[in-house]
Length: 548
Image 1 (cartoon, rainbow, N blue to C red):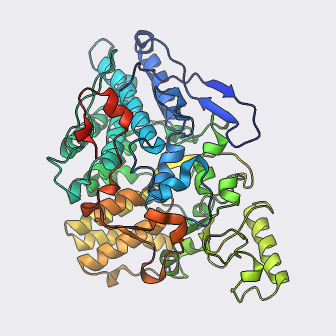
Image 2: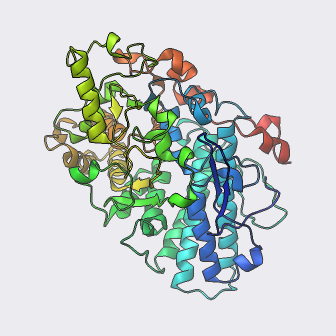
Image 3: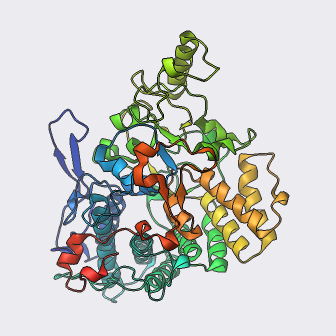
């Protein structure tokens, strides 16, 4: 799989490329040093962890087989909402192959950059975690609270990476035969020569995830506590993050009681955001309900590879200006006006873009009675620019979102990437309790979250399992919109994609192509990412018959 392992340190290499295009800056998070030095002490291993934190969002060019067209979780988090059809493109703009993913033309190909880079980046995390775990647990370094904290983080990273891999390159646990369905190779080595293994079953990978996360939790219980007060602190993994990962593992493998209990533990100490915080832009780990996120260092990141470049409507890049991202209008129209989350989707924004894929861009084709004159149209455009900070060369579009806003809207600053929030934990608890089924407990969890967003929410009308699960899915779709869960949610629920049903989502069939309609995952192998052909060619334990 790898010709060599690069132990990830917080030393940063910077390569500046002179160009006026949006690929003018390429950056690498780490330099390589010898494994012996890197693993000699707990302090040195902590440096590896700092490198791993940064590697989560770094351009992939620092790894063997990597490409700078993908910048870690800047790309992987919005990818699942892109493929899942939740974050909708309003016009052509295929920078970085972003719309190839939308059209299901990327992950379905064994030579695609997306499929290759996700595979290599996750296994690089695993290799670095293995290096720490293997040395820190061999008895050569005295055990103390600091070392236990390092071990806990390494096990958590390994569980996180394997979960990501099996969810993308294996069939869904709940919709297949996990004991026999092929998953991904499970690797424990970190020493040269580093050779990959055969594909383990989906169940074996999930079992390893659970073993790792339980080992992480056990280690964290005797560990130094994570500091608090700065956004960088929440880039560190702690016992709360581990419980959150455990809840995800259990939810997606049908271990409902474990999922509900772990979700409760994960959210302790992280209060739900109020309306003011909720509308700040989801751009900082300092938000009270953030449990875990990457604290993106602006001087070390890639502006035009950033999460906010791909997801936000306030980022000053062509992917944004020419292609404002919109929400499924069926979802937004179903939100009651008493729910303040509806304010983050501009239903009546003018459609400025003459190249909009719905064919209604520009005042000449306007049908919204709110703008009977060009003066009224222009006045609303000017108002939106003033309120949300984008520039006059940006295009507005009906149902565009303003959920993700930069701290400096209209600029190119990347801001933090949020991975885990209290809201997700309430939703995991509610879904797991409903599946048991424990209707009262599920209602309690759902009520807490939904009433925080909509004071008029009445959970009592969802008084049986089908109604309750339907509402939990609805709440999950709106609460976690754009945060990277749609693809795996649809697999767990065995639901396909249909942008035409029930009045349509607002997506263009011409633009979306194969992504416009996909059958449910249990009977549609296109949901499973192709194993990179380079991996099959290089791995003696894999052959053509191992391809998805």
